[in-house]
View 1 (spheres, rainbow, N blue to C red):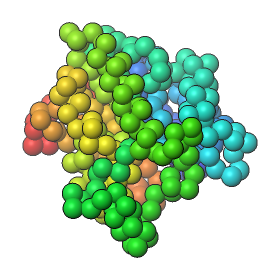
View 2: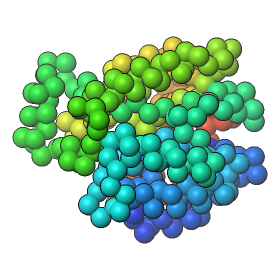
View 3: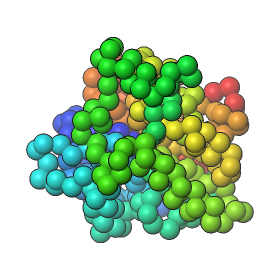
Amino acid sequence: MAISDLHVAYPENREIVEQLRPESEHDWLLVAGDVGEFFADIEWALRLLSERFAKVVWVPGNHELWTVRDDPVRARGVERYRRLVEMCRGLGVVTPEDPYPVYDGPGGPVTIAPLFLLYDYTFRPPDLSKEEAMAWAHETGIVCTDEFVLHPDPHPTRDAWCRARLRETEIRLDSRDPDLPTVLINHWPLTRQPTEVLRYPQFAQWCGTVESADWHLRYNAAAVVYGHLHIPRTTWYDGVRFEEVSLGYPRERRMYGYDGAKALRCVLPAADGGAGA
């Protein structure tokens, strides 16, 4: 099962997380990032879920990587990510830095591959440079908060960090068992197509990298799980199922009549569906 974008700083979301339960004692849970901004909140949620599900697999979103003013944990960039990984390991939660586990339950066996790729501003109009796309975002007031609180230290930029993560992750994926299909989990969508429905297209440049566009084929994905967009839905690209599993913000659920109590998405076994879904 999978979920993302829990944003537990919101009391309504915290109540939903408190109510999440597996359907059986064997269920795994994939958490595709944005649990929260505060280190203590992230730990609270992952501890709770790890006590309920047979295995929890987590990848960071941009919010976990924020260094916000009121968080006692002042670590930035790679150091903050490292501390999050250490915390998860203490809870028995699988991270992108751990060996990829193999799920042998219904729909398996598959290699569960948690990824941390970030973004490199390449989800932008093809006729705009990075500088021009950023100027467009500033002119229209659609600028991701990452620009102010997601620090790439010690990398010079967020896109440089993204390039490093791509190289590291490719090495790990290339060394997996090639005979097993994968479930790829990344906070940001692996392909740019999901961003085509964004209300504000300026925001897409903070939503992924074109470098991972073929990974669902290259790494034999049975399914791809992501969040970030707060547009929960199932889509198919090249015959591969993509699951956007965001819980999102309370105001969004009220706006669209989305029942957060049903936010858990079954990834395996796959429900019946076709490429037109």
